[in-house]
Image (tube, rainbow, N blue to C red; front, side, top):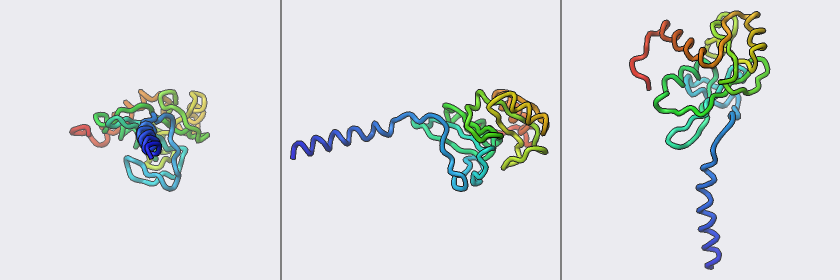
Length: 166
């Protein structure tokens, strides 16, 4: 009886440690089931979807998006609440995950490139692939930091500056 009790205590003490594993890497998106955290649409196109790995109150979780514009807006609006550990994007051509900070983006091609929310922002794992798409669709090729600034400026020119960040 004492042995069973000790085994139970050891088992219970190990369980909390299992939940503490650091979440890392890109998520698995269940197309047709997962929802965009920004707009609430069902994610159905993995070429345009993206994800943030955030830390909230000491816990890591993935936040999913159907359009890169949604991810950029969410990240900017929730900067006080979420600590972004890493951002992930899908390569528009291959559908493979890539770290956003090393990806290249096309911005300003919303008339030529269809995305779920109409941002026209698409990502590529390499500069060469982005430039090839730019020749076809137009827009401007840029890195992640320049993209965040360009999207913010575009949103402010269209909708005005936000009153208070969330």
